[in-house]
Length: 353
Image (cartoon, helix red, strand yellow):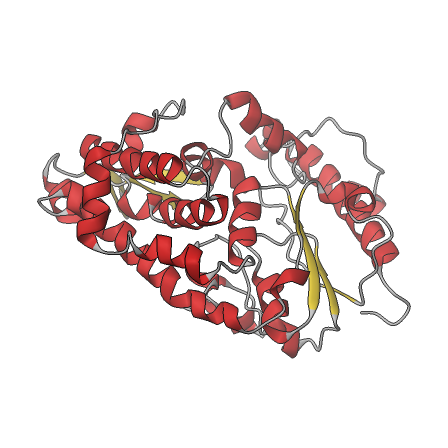
């Protein structure tokens, strides 16, 4: 089953590939696990299982607390009409996009403290002009504006001076060696990465992404796309988010108790995509998320688990992990998973798995 439980399982699949998400699995799991007609994924991410359900003619529902993931899943699961796609297709020609960019007002730079470091100045200006074109040119056409916006968000890391690594981001001006990181020569690394024309590099990246999404749109012709709701919310409130809903199959891959903070690693996309507009908003998401990382609210109550307490008792109290609060993270994580599984059990039908 290994090939079906990681991103490689759908990295090149139409529609799934529109936004790379750190953790995702193949929709082929639906068949491999013989899932039933009504499927719930309470940690749905960008919607792999929901898209697979739509393509197989099943019904499903997904929950996720990350607004970027929910946005991407909803765009993927909402077929656009021929007329709407024609509007997007008008921008997929280089001359048309360039003409629109020239007269577009750039969107304001987000308030992220490292906004000036994650993009080169020319690249940042070009990105913000494309965003401005999308927001003003399609202000009255939300469906196609969202489609174009997802294409824009999807290229940020590709054209950025940063990349995701570990529990956050790293900058491309530093190269990792066995002995540590070394700084790349200024000017040289930009030339190697972006070429001589940074503006054109961004335009080419956006055109490539948009054309790929337009090509994949033909896969919307078949399937059950209208029966796959995606809910933005806290999985610990599943009983409120999905009142009296029943499912005969529940499948999910939750965040692991490994301190990985999705809101830290995806902060560029969250801020530049307009999904958060302040550090307070970003911190609210981190605090409300599953207690799998140190940015979550570790002060929430929990029910002790005796074997876990025994394990925590073996930890070195002088270790960095203890000082950082890992014992409270573990207690909170197991309690959150206990409540999640309790909600899942209530959401099952009698003949379920």
